[in-house]
Amino acid sequence: MNQLPDKLYYTIGEVAKHFGLNTSNLRYWEREFKQLHPKKNASGKRKYSKDDVAVIVTINHLVKERGFTIEGAKKHLKDEGKSAVTKVEALEKLGYVKSELQKILRTMQAD
Image (cartoon, rainbow, N blue to C red; front, top):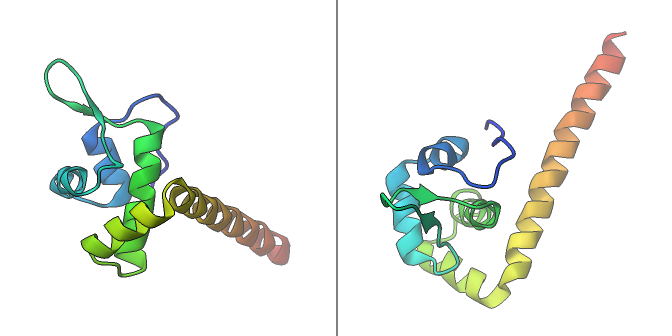
């Protein structure tokens, strides 16, 4: 998965590519999850904020990695609220740190 550049808003294409999803998946998730509400510009193009991306990280984790149904993920997000998003963000950051540490270890072992 590629890293999203550091900017205020992302297009639907950038977000879909980052998560390996179709843009139709994101539009469907917008209808299903009230927590996901990207802004739209004058021409109707979606602009996803960092908060929107954090919600997508959580939805993607619940649905794709943990095997939740859409209804189950909706219930989980409703019950857990912001803490569910924060937990998944923390797990994602820890995964990144782990992969970086493994790279360092491989480099050290090669010497």
